[in-house]
Length: 89
Image 1 (cartoon, one colour):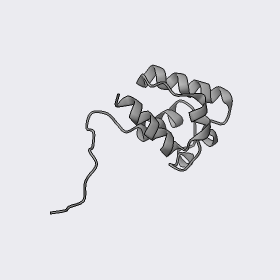
Image 2: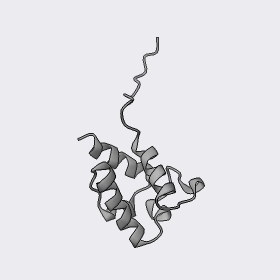
Image 3: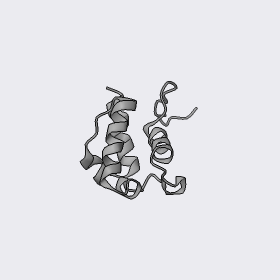
Image 4: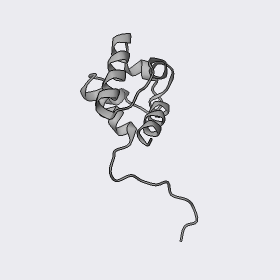
């Protein structure tokens, strides 16, 4: 029997990383090879219009409000943590 704690796994909703990857690839035509946890969101959303569109898409599709600053400052992994936390509320 293992004594290490296992983080809870949600069977009802995909993790934000998976959702964000899908949005980036499908809606924003980002190369799937570029979508890495350490990639800065500004590397993936290359212009300010894409940043605004991503914020609007997240609000419409997930009901999550994010700031453009978050999209400009965080890596994909960091941003996914923020999105997951807001989805859990």
